[in-house]
Amino acid sequence: MVRYIIIGAGAVGGAIGARLFDSGHKVVLVARGAHHAALATDGLRFATPSGTLTLPIPVVDRPESLELRAGDVLVLAVKTQDTVAALDAWRDRPVVGGGRAAEELPVVCAQNGVESERMAVRRFRHVYGMCVWLPASYLEPGVIEAAGAPLTGILHLGRYPSGTDEVAERIREELEKSVFLAPVSADVMRWKYGKLLGNLGNAVEALCGLGDEAAELYGRVRDEGAKVLTAAGIDYVGAEEAAERRGHLVQLEPVNGVRRGGGSSWQSLTRGTGSIEADYLNGEIVMLGRCHGVPTPVNDVLQREANRFAREHQVPGSMTPAELLRRASASVEG
Image 1 (cartoon, helix red, strand yellow):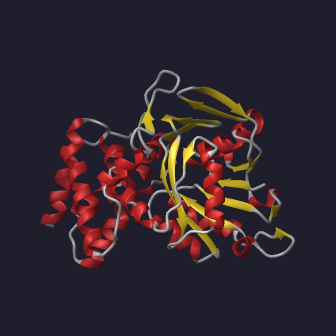
Image 2 (image 1 turned 45 degrees about the vertical axis):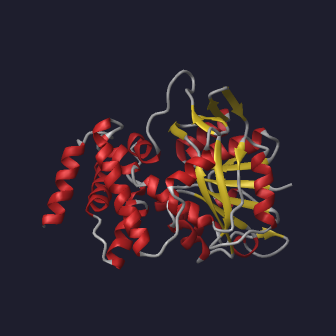
């Protein structure tokens, strides 16, 4: 039986691990600090629209605490800014029977953005991309909330940079027994670039909140991203195709009577982690814009201000859309 090593048991990793474990699959969570202590002592409290489960999933806080074996699947679910450290910690771990993790084990990048696969393939031979549509939250040690229903999420999966194989099909089968839809795609990065355009709004939400006043920002940031991807010759799944695939399979429902709050970047600021994904979301568009001569003033200011908010532990939602647009305009004029 496949054993899933979930490297980063936050919102996404914790939800995937919980669903797999609850459906009978072998899972080990990897977590740090207070989250690890809570998981080790009390198990994972996994809250969904249909109720809360307490799951005694095995947990470790470092690679040295786990003996790897053939058939293990590494699921990388840390934030992209933590990817290199995580990959480097696991790449040279021995696998029972010979070899090391980087040569023997598949690593699945269940993360936002498109950079982690590039980082992984420098270090691991067998790399898979995963486009994650999974509305989940991690705000308290030992507790993961997943607000999607009737399915917990949709997880497009494929080899990096392209293709499919038996490993991907086996993972698909086991995820689809665990309250997910997991289509195997030969062009998984096309799905991830489409998701990237949506994730450009994460920084808007983190800085300015969820109000209607931010609608112009959402439109401008996505328009910049689409122009950049077109200039770079990068194919991506459009909003209409993505909505058609999602359909009514993953609807946001209250968990414990409460509607879901903000997304991953908002959660990073709320937890006061000191870092945020903006360099690998808005920053991806800024980088490609510079390479292909496309101005990206809104993404540029979002990247810069999101990093400042994280570094200075600013309160999420405390900048007005008008102020952010003013800074973007000043950047163009400067």
